[in-house]
Image (cartoon, rainbow, N blue to C red):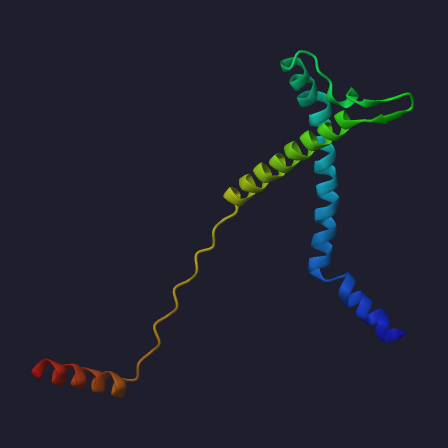
Length: 128
């Protein structure tokens, strides 16, 4: 039982799990903001541009049986706007991230004997 608890603590408190949890919470909040933007600003603007068409009310059917394809179209538009917003946010974040340039590897130190032998080799090549 104690081994299982120890394993669970190692799993739950690793940095990757905590980072993932923070990402999920921030992603949910960001999704709510973008959904509000879509529902309250962008959708009415699209409706104005299309002559007052409201996608969410479009449906086909008789009586109580109805296929609400307008809600589906609205969901697709919401998804595309949310995906584009996340894409743009990631692009901006990547531009602000400092690009770490790899440090040049130091030249390995050559022993004096090896250096002398290389010079002799090079001189012999020149003579031929």
